[in-house]
Image (cartoon, rainbow, N blue to C red; front, side, top):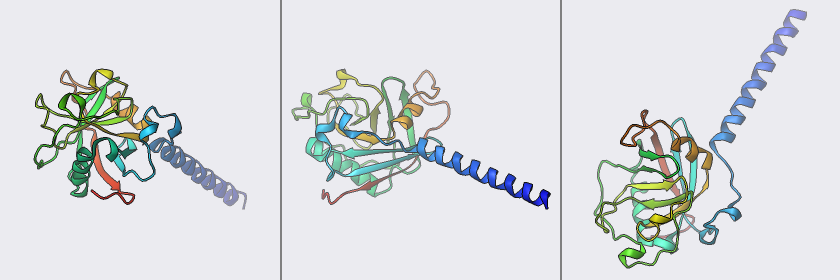
Length: 206
């Protein structure tokens, strides 16, 4: 009888430990943020579309998209999401204390107009830590699907790239991705896979 009780207690202890580990893992994967303290709080709105970026082995990041800042860019980004274009893509360029870049897709749409000041478009969303912005070539109207998320604030990008959203959770995931080992071309030594990007439109219509 004592042996049975001891065995039951051992199994119960293992179960509780497993639950605690799962709880810690879930807590690590989704980090809640006090949005009132974010530097782009003026752009946050409960009616904004919210995207969820699931990164394999790293966790989840959530971000609001800001149509009031860069509507064309937001609509273009959502169109890629709705086609599942980002699924199983990756963050292919990573520079710690700067940004992580992803969004290479199998088929890109036509380039869009760059919504930033040096291209004649007012955009007052600065490149703070956590801000989403569009990658481009030296051609100002060349953005398609590739985007980046700022790891640290970088004022030299302001007015030069189309910022269009900001993280509202998952800064811990951003930090983990930004600090992976990379090669001399800033590519991660091990793939950083975007399992999916989904969107809750919250009633927003393109």
